[in-house]
Image (tube, rainbow, N blue to C red; front, side, top):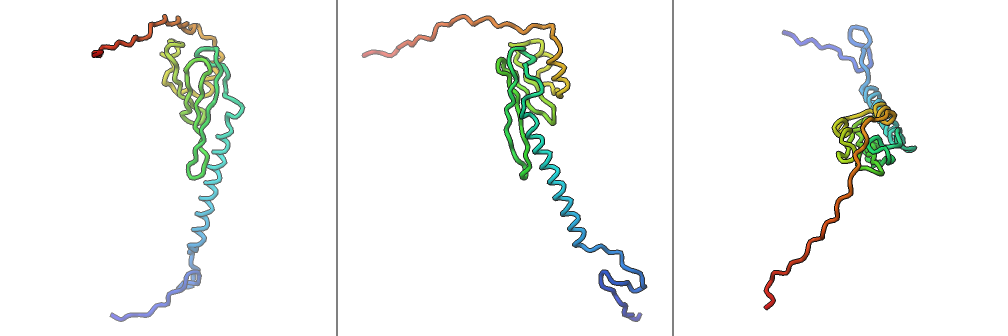
Length: 167
């Protein structure tokens, strides 16, 4: 068996049979990949900035649907992941102890105080609601009145008993 020398063309030059080589340079592939990564990062950063400013003028509803007396206040904590802003929010009532925790984009997990409104506690506690459901909850008149807490009777403070020997 004889070894026949063959001519190997350089990348980007004509092959041995006369047809052009369809190779794409590695630098072009790396450049396209790099541009796609930078573009993706820019989109995620822009969405994070939009999410940071979402509730700067207040929450979607103002009055608390649980006690119907307090106002809802947004508390925002800004975190960053790889430099991308990721706000975490909770919404507290100024009167009762109900809390909405952000469970996703425009979705909230409700924590209702059992003492302030037992009916809403059974219906909404731990449920994830979107903003449209919160608007509907705030606009509907609930037939159940919030529970009125009777003041606790005064208790006598504990008395100190000295049982040591005085000798």
